[in-house]
Amino acid sequence: MASRHRNASPVTAGKDSPQPASAATSLRLVAEFPLDAPEAKESVTVTVRFRPLSSQEVRLGEEIAWYADGDTIVRSEQNHSIAYAYDRVFGPTTTTRHVYDAAALHVISGAMEGINGTIFAYGVTSSGKTHTMHGDQRSPGIIPLAVKDAFSIIQETPKREFLLRVSYLEIYNEVVNDLLNPSGQNLRIREDLQGTFVEGIKEEVVLSPAHALSLIAAGEEHRHVGSTNFNLLSSRSHTIFTLTIESSGPCSESSEEEAVTFSQLNLIDLAGSESSRAETTGVRRKEGSYINKSLLTLGTVISKLTDGKATHVPFRDSKLTRLLQSSLSGQGRVSLICTVTPASSNSEETRNTLKFAHRAKHIEIQVSQNKIMDEKSLIKKYQNEICQLKEELDQLKRGILSGTPSKDATEDNVILWKQKLEDGNVKLQSRLEQEEAAKAALLARIQRLTKLILVSTKATQTPRLSQCPRPRRRHSFGEEELACLPHRRRDIVLDGESNDLFVAMEGFDETFEVSSKGENKNRKGLLNWFKLRVYKSDTV
Ligand SMILES: Nc1ncnc2c1ncn2[C@@H]1O[C@H](COP(=O)(O)OP(=O)(O)OP(=O)(O)O)[C@@H](O)[C@H]1O
Image (tube, rainbow, N blue to C red):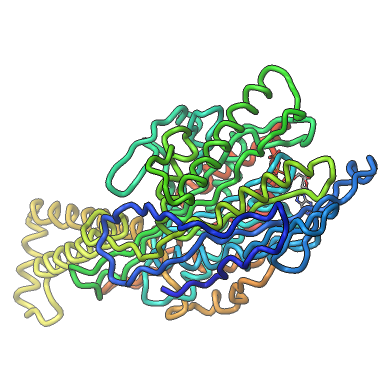
């Protein structure tokens, strides 16, 4: 698969400039799945995003220490010969949409085709990580933009069926907590042939962007956030939002052996690395030391991966690096967005971030499409069950019909049949009732399973849907678009039936109930705006 992003540009001169890339190490895990496409080598996409000086920094008379010199260079204001080069550098006025297009879009579209993807924001506290990953009402972040695009891609891909699941966790003081399930605390990280995973984490099948984002918003309620000297709403934990994508041809058309395409997209908002000036006492200091330790381990892992000689990479030294192991080992696309502040008071921290970013550029990754050949995939399980149930339903209907008089039945037969009933043939009556009940149960099961599988409505657009403007990636993430996405409703017509089935999003209202409870003062709440919109517009 062709690389869709730029390679590292050469670094400009300067005593502080990083050295040319050493031989990059690729420790790719062996994929369990057979691959039908040749693997392509890429490097991690590394971008740097400046935030503007805050009003407080302006008030304090802070000066600019680092600045974006064109599209790919970060330069020191004090010493112009010190400069670093990246795939892209975004100045303080760049919108998140712009960052998304350059740093995230290729990862999301790859994930929809079966290539694992990881995007993470790294930077000191208050440099703009959460602003970049989550965003706010005026400027949606990479997570909502990615979720929306994933559903748009499904809409643009007729003749393929998708199943999307999400999970959302935080690593707080080296403990993994499930943000979608408050009782899922201190979860264990396990390993199998496919890599590391969190045991017992809740995964929710999602039916629409609104559904997925309402789950994130609910999860945000549980995230650890606190006030520090530098940020009133500082993230005190790392969070990983995972979108698991399965897709395959439709059940009826796919042969038994057809593989399912499977991938995971990890969207990570790291807690900010903290300087010793950051404070503090008690809880905040403890949190800070855990955050720094895990980020230090991340830095060490990246150094080892890129120095070409390392025999041991200490993935196991922190929960964060353990969970990122397969991504950092080169399995799937990785995009690192380093957020920095131009402020002179943070000059040294910014330089450290820039060095970290530069090292990460030399990680080599292999891009390949994952396929599952067996029945492990959930989508295959559902598809097969739907086919089987439809067959059973057919048989049942044929059985019922054979027990009832046909149109062509002779008058004598009809009389005889009626006679039997009138004579109190209770057995036949109850068999009919039982079969009707079984038929209804089968139908209900088919409906429940079918609505979990997402398909493009392009081939079967109803007039109501086609009146809605088609979602386009370039639009802002508005209420109207969410309301008009096709995934809120799925019409299915079963053989011999003409049921127009409306999808009631099971669990959605319930989840929303939870997330729409009163405001949590501590919560960063950047997705709160979203919930309010959903509440108004998304009643299915
Ligand atoms: N690119 C930007 N444009 C405008 N405002 C920004 C930008 N980046 C960050 N900000 C603002 O700066 C403040 C701090 O940003 P944010 O909370 O995203 O930092 P953070 O890196 O996530 O911090 P922490 O690690 O402490 O959680 C917020 O008020 C945010 O709105």
